Length: 115
Image 1: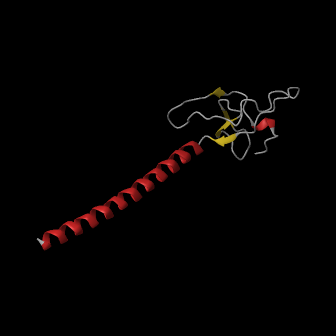
Image 2 (image 1 turned 45 degrees about the horizontal axis):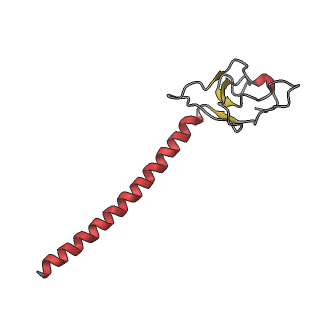
Image 3 (image 1 turned 180 degrees about the vertical axis):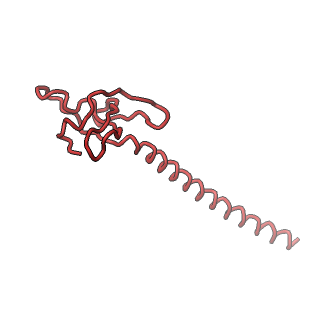
């Protein structure tokens, strides 16, 4: 989808949409709440996406927006990737703790054998 193709954007939009559920609130590069729009191109017909609220406000205005764009379906991907990263770090920490416990156990067994 071309960022210059105004007909590909739905003008009916809602600010912020939902902060929970499938569609989380997004902040654009301008620092404003992104708006949820629906693609109108043949390839992506009906697919929801987040966009800058200032994008192409009017041809006469200097404010052109930041061209922020993110498919709404990518929200879940970002959350999933964050969760996976957190779980991997947790697993690594647990594996390190297990090694420490196993070493301590060997030392204690060795000390008991010497008594």
